Length: 137
Ligand code: TYD
Image 1: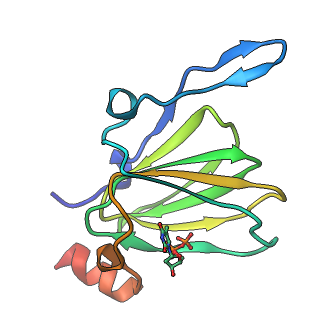
Image 2: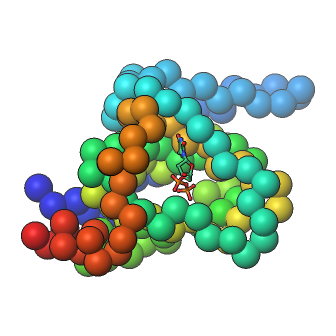
């Protein structure tokens, strides 16, 4: 099945609130569509920088704005959608086969990623033409 931006959705997680602040927890595959094998985070992104610029063959990811805000542009080779993440209890699920650009980072933004697999450079598609060829075969 061809990847579609319509299968990438924003998931709201519970916020446990009290006067001293909030907690959000994500209970693995009970709350997201994969088992978490890796956690990583982007931070100290200089203003105006663009990250991402790739797709994955097999990796599933959930992207969260743990602090600050940024936009995620997702692209299935046919349709592009821009999703603004700016609340720590919301995450964007990205299926395999979706190109993503990460833009408009606020100062102090922390982009937290929960991923379905360990880091593997062979799982990346880093060239947009290669991505289109993979998508349209
Ligand atoms: P990349 O995934 O291209 O970053 P982004 O999508 O945020 O722009 O990774 C940047 C570099 O970091 C690249 O050389 C691979 C390395 N890296 C790891 O070694 N382990 C990881 O888990 C990740 C995500 C990246």
